[in-house]
Image (tube, rainbow, N blue to C red; front, side, top):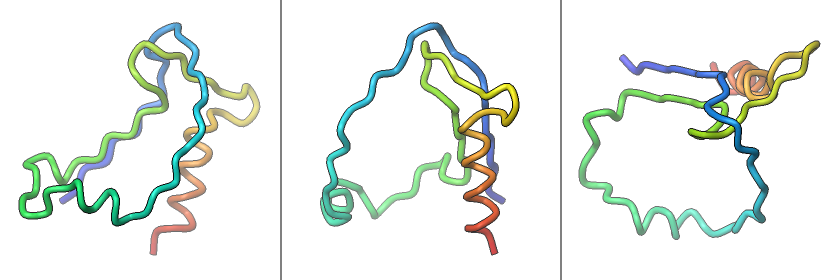
Amino acid sequence: KPKLCFIQVCQGTKMQTSLWKHYGTEEDDTEKADLSRIPVEADFLIGMATMESYVSFRNIQKGSIYIQELCKRLKTGCH
């Protein structure tokens, strides 16, 4: 069975900067992937609110944006 871990914690003091996202095609990503093998860890999903060394934000009233969006997506995407 798949295992899901969602972690909402600060992991440091750095602040993230934003970048413009490059919109490529799905074919671009597929060509780079080795589709003949599945990693041993394929049944694990670890979702982190932020990267190592960076802060994580939360609203005092509503909680973290990460958890809010995660819950919203799980409600609308799970059948």
